[in-house]
Length: 623
Image 1 (cartoon, rainbow, N blue to C red):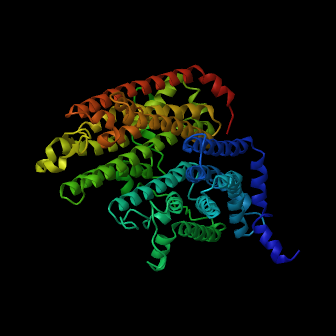
Image 2 (image 1 turned 180 degrees about the vertical axis):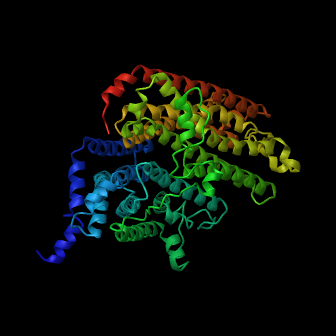
Image 3 (image 1 turned 30 degrees about the vertical axis):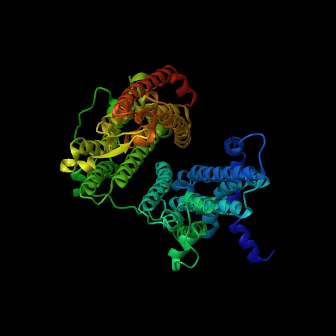
């Protein structure tokens, strides 16, 4: 065999690391379940979409083609979403396992080159994602039998999804090779991917509302379309409602992004992946980017400012411990490092400052009413989403992490009871998250107080006039004044619910990674179902609908910021009685929802205490 061909094979199919990863992972039943569930979801969604979009038994060819095109668009979006969710899960092992210094010590003693090490890790883990992606190709091909789905659209959808998977994999390998990440960074990596997608979608929507997109109305493609796989797919599947720029209308990179966003996304993702792989090759045998610094003899000034001691000091000033030491440890020990303290209080300060700046910009006329409500809603949505993810990560690793490092074995030798241990975990985590929960509550409170006090002299900004379809009109506050209080009543028990579900999975899981994945899946599925039910009920059911909207933070925030659009069956009544009834129903619904979440928390806690000894003994010695 020619030497050059042998060299190429060792970079790809014959790479020892890639072969090891593919062979070992292929024997795991978990991957089989993931592939089966992925295809089952796509099949069920396609079947449901075809039945829902078909008007009846007598269907014309035109209606059948329209149903096929709509169904294809739905599963194309779903496939991109599933790839963005599943790819970080498969790639998380590259961060959690290969970031271990002992693993790298063994790999670096082999005769493999730097490029072989990097590409072996990348191709070995990316194989499962790409195999999962192209396993659904026959399902997509079936949509062409109904018409309305060109083959080019199918190919472009797969190219966009493959580009997203490749980019996520390259970022994970770069983090692993640089040694800057460990098991704690797995969830941060996952959150960063989701946050980036949500942020680019929000910015694109805001630019389109300002008329800064393509098309005659300015509501088409923007420069952020080519930076997001969902938006790139949308530009490909909806050229009339989401138009791109005409070829040749713009030059350079901007013209490429505005005229061909799907091709631009695929090109950028491949180029960034190649750059990250090349950069990783340069650092893989040099010990990564992580530098070992000498221990200081005393605490630097910036650590003293936060009440922290030096890295090598064995004595710490005494601190007052709560009646429950586990609760105090969870709430206080998570602030033991400078990075965690800065991250926590930066979120609080930046969130509060952003809320004040948005209100000031609205008061000075820089923002109009629609932009103000959109920004407030986006801010609160993003903040609640991030807080929920942080709560899930902390809770999912609270017990499993202590089992892995042996701390749980030491705690079990103390007089601490299972009830004291588990309730202390929940209390400490919720107490730690309270300053973060205060940020979205403060955002709605500031906006609500601005509306309640009449815009501080600008009454036209504090409210707007809504015309009832049947006749008449009334004034609606730009933000419901009690929105912050209603959100606080419901959000704290919801976060406690997230924490308790995380503790449940953390107790029964062998490792932190499986606990995090299980917790995120359960909470997101349950919250998503409740949110969709609340969102649909809020607009279709009078009086009861606003109360049901409080079942999920997402539907509640949406209803409080946009009551006229989301609670139309209740609000569109003669006079202002409809809006008053809707506000009262949301308040009552928030109290009832809080009671439901508290009851679930108490029930799960009781069950965990009852089965604590059995579960701990069953997983004893697990690392």
